[in-house]
Length: 117
Image (cartoon, rainbow, N blue to C red; front, top):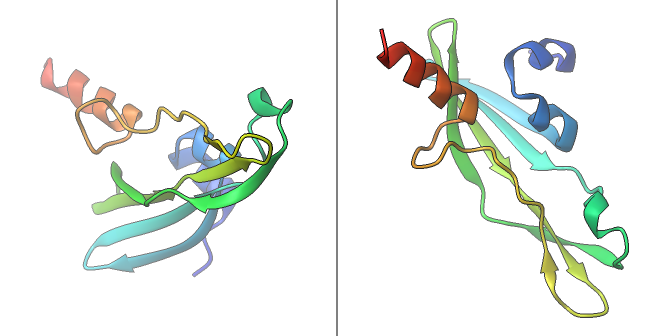
């Protein structure tokens, strides 16, 4: 079954679909796993540097809103670049995971609101 990007726009954080590519997905034991890799576009704030793609950071796994009774895990691989002139590693600073959790910011905020009732 092919996941439609148009459908994913309604259920996933916008930053994921704007800056990451969905590279695969699988469902096992009532859990949906979505695998994302950061796009190869260099960070706009680093346009003054000569950067080359230099692999990925270790994959992070975060929990998102459940869908139709299925647990959802986002597997995210962030890209890093190498500055050719300084040999410095450059990366974007993403705010994908809520502080102190392994959940997306939106899911953690949702659970926080639920706890107030």
